[in-house]
Image 1 (spheres, one colour):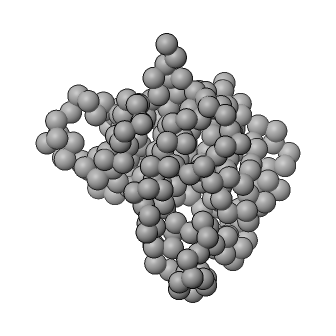
Image 2 (spheres, helix red, strand yellow):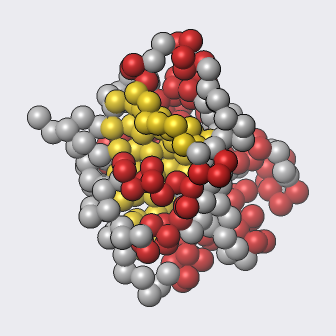
Length: 234
């Protein structure tokens, strides 16, 4: 995303979450951090049972907004056969490409998850993983439009019956309005993942009342994994 001629022109000096939607901010941050690993929200160990249940290890998986995460490498060690990670910040893609040059199962490319014409419809039958990427887009000035663009693209590249997994801090009462917009014809369920491996889910949104959904979070310092399953091919 191009800067708009604002204070974001020097992202190294700007720390507000408003900058999280800008590729210039991330490029500068990754340069300064020198490729050091950073995991948003949860590490692989706490997420493994959920990822293993809802992503297909035998099929290609897309990881959008990889940043400097190493979760894809842990997935590879756990048996995932093909994980393609993208980010719109070229610096982190170069760093990870060099780091995992000897791991054929892990591939990397510069791509903007709001528009991915390089990938055909249904290209990722193993699923799509989003670990905080939608959250970053929602920090921008055009959050409604850009979040929908991203979700529609993730829906498009999903294989029939595959799942888009979104890992976030946001509970159902604030996140479902983004996931249940026109054009997103998927079935939504979610997990709440708390401390010391405590998990509740999957809970189908269609089976819960507004009052029940509003009761989340039920755990302190928890995060949510939304599982959005595309209809199977007719």
